[in-house]
Amino acid sequence: METANASLAHPQRFRVTGGASLVGEVRVTGAKNSVLKLMAAALLAPGVTRLSEVPDILDVAIMSELLRRLGCDVQRDRDASTLTIDVPQRIEHRADYDLVRRMRASIAVLGPLLARTGEADVALPGGDAIGSRPLDFHIAGLVKMGATVENEHGFIVAKVKRLTGATIWLDFPSVGATENLVMAAVLAEGRTEIDNAAREPEIVDLCVMLGRMGAKIDGAGTSTLIIEGVDSLQPVSHATVADRIVAGTWAMAAVMTLGDVTVHNADPAHLEIALDKLVTAGATVDRIHDGFRVMMDRRPTAVDAVTLPFPGFPTDLLPMALALNAVASGTAMVTENVYESRFSFVNELARLGADIRTDGHHAVVRGRPLLSGAPVTTPDIRAGAGLVIAGLVAEGETIVSEIHHIDRGYPKFDEQLCALGATVIREAEPAVTFD
Ligand code: UD1
Image 1 (tube, rainbow, N blue to C red):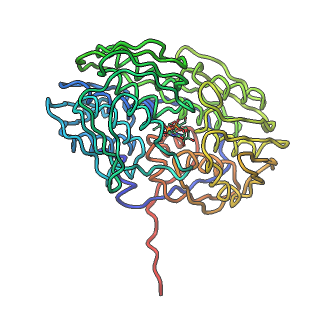
Image 2 (image 1 turned 135 degrees about the vertical axis):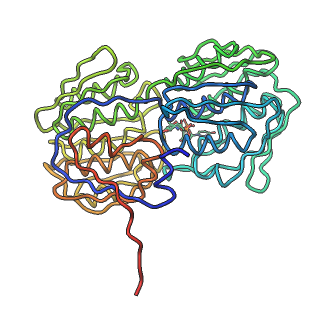
Image 3 (image 1 turned 90 degrees about the horizontal axis):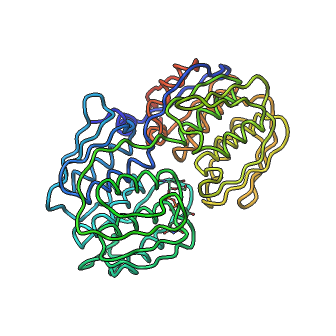
């Protein structure tokens, strides 16, 4: 069983000591937001799929369990970064609530199951506390491709004899809907066009793997995807694209702590706007052969940020942008355009003394020289990383609870922070007793 499971079984917290500058080298592994979809895509081809650069995170453990319940044999190799998925000829088509509620990305099995078996019963997901996150684009697209989709007793129940190609417009370039519809379309009869498709590097990674499996996809990385359906696909070996959000988190942490961090296995082209913001804040960012180096020698200058689908500033780095501006000199406006509840964790940052005022999808952040350590609780993965990093620039100790959220997306976050010179201790959450 993956080590990332520990914090879910026994509640843990991070004790973060403020004051250290992050200095050193760090290597990023594969992207959570890619590997979960690559694992779902394996369902499209019977036989053995091998994925490398798989991060040791809780969400991979959850997706592995989901695939096992569908009849697959899923093993992690001894070096822990390769996952082998053996997909049988006949797979089950039901994804239960106990797993799906833990991870919204479970919905990625909907398209592949429907394409492979003509049936999919997938529990309506839960996920992060960052907004309502509906599935209407996923469902409307599958209906256009000929499926019937009902909501029955908390499940999406989809059926089709064989999916047929269609022209689908997305109202918003949804990452999850684009992925589900691509995975459905590759085995559909005829041609599918997806307009206003998402362009994230993780979508490109999925399309590259599908293409090597035998799918015919044009336009990956643009907003129009054209898919010519085929009758069957073959399993392949594939290396997961590097995690640009983890890489961006290291970059922002280096700037906030006035550090010097070299990030390996990171593509700066996947983070152009975010790295440019750091340069505006006063940092030096140098490209190296397999990543970049971020150096900062003075208090950052406040810098505005507006989240948008790729190639815009990523919504998943919004908590880090708020944390950075909380200790910058000056005032910044940070705008969130993807999720309506992304700012819900601002009250936790305020417990550390951050001066942030929100109004709708805007936040005004007035920087102060130092935050002040306090106990905080993280509501989701990215807010968790933002709070830990804020703890690094807080006087005294910050205790971050509910860190199973962070373990969902950041492999060995505490160990990597310590290797860069921070003091972050993982400890058991004390039991609450009432007299
Ligand atoms: C993925 C990422 C997440 C990232 C997000 C945006 C994974 C596992 N998660 O989430 O980390 O923050 O992309 O970059 O890859 N929407 C609808 N109807 C739909 C689908 C989406 O209205 O059917 C809305 C959502 O509510 C949200 C917006 O579209 O406001 C973007 O969502 P989407 O791009 O689908 O995000 P996810 O794929 O869930």
